[in-house]
Amino acid sequence: QVQLVESGGGSVQAGGSLRLSCAASGYTLNSYHTLGWFRQAPGKEREGVACVYNYGRTTYAESVQGRFTASKDNAKNTLYLQMNSLKPEDTAIYYCAADLKTLDYCYTAVFYNYWGQGTQVTVSS
Image 1 (tube, rainbow, N blue to C red):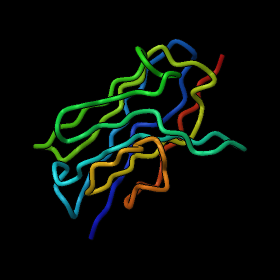
Image 2: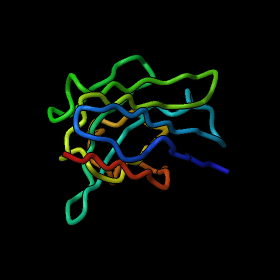
Image 3: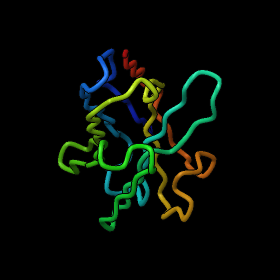
């Protein structure tokens, strides 16, 4: 059974850090050609924040560039999102997503076939 399970969310003050994890099962992490981190704030659409391609390229949304770092540990079958210098506007439910294909539009949620259940991140000012 394919499953993605996020963890690591919580409440922090502005300027703080959190590290999110996304544990994969069913497929090995390296089987997914595209991995993504998304977030959704109340009343807003789901937006992509980072894309990790299994050929080695990682990209970031402009809003998190320089503050967030996505990485993966194939041995642990886990995707990570290190979030530093958090801002109140980073408050959202964060989701990991995966697809077996290399996605040209990796910030578009509809193209991903596999999703985690989400983890809440709350940043207070």
